[in-house]
Length: 435
Image (tube, rainbow, N blue to C red; front, side, top):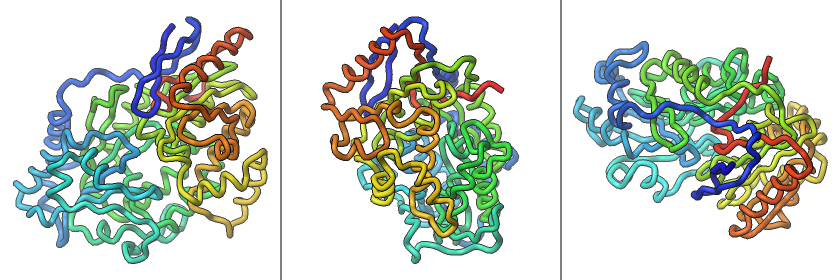
């Protein structure tokens, strides 16, 4: 059978045996336009007053809307202009509205990305700034301690805001259970030190820090505690199907709206694994998620419940922006070539904390189950010399050869009698182990 996978901005068709297990999300078709779905939840939000009524609680300060960065494919252009118009109609001058891009530890976004995400009108007529986690002048400490006892420093514009709106995309998340909700604040708008525990070794080593689980998940508890201590006045979370269409919108009180969104997503995108396969074929979610190797790691980890121990993962991603941050790249290079157990020992030292070490630690989860030789990664975005340093079985090929390279691996596995599982959406479908 032919299955369509995502690679960068393109679709790639691969032929799999008819008995292959195909893990796909099953979201309903949108019942209305994105505008209408968002309108409905603003009129009748969960655990909260109608949006305009909530706005009347505004304190002195700007209305700050936290928005996701380019790594989340939220079609803000389809609904954000109407929200901004409602805010202005409610009496808030345009000059007192600020869009804050929750970059977390990611790079700052570009003007062209603002246009792609928000549309020309919003990008050119509203104040937009990017969170900078390591710029001390852009951070402010709030009173109280996080769930783990950590001090909290957040983006100062958010701390000083008169009304805080957190938006985001709810999807399975390989560390925090689900994205969205509280993650817009932590790590989205947090200082590097504030996420020290959130992304620390002990949190990620906890088996509850996994896809589709909030119960006892330390990352969820930490993130939620930070968001609650700050105070979020209104939230808006959307859910996308495999066509990147908004199928549901959940607005209102932080916890209530987010929990409802998570339950919906779990029912649509987190199937139970009945039987592990010898070989898993997964993309990395396509653009924008596969723009860096750093982000591609989510695909490796998300498919782990579906593959046998010492089985094989055949993964691919565009990596049009290369590997990732300088810190992440340096750590991957330092502990490549089978030295990943040394990395895990290294970060158990409480004095060690390096930006993006968390993604390396999650990569190690994959290596612990299948081994470096069985983690095959195909890309046209990273040269062979660097790719072989990234603790994968490397296949650096021209773009025109990506499909044929992956297909040849599949054909070889089929010829040897291996059972196959496939993830056409990459980490957007996150199966859970049968318990």
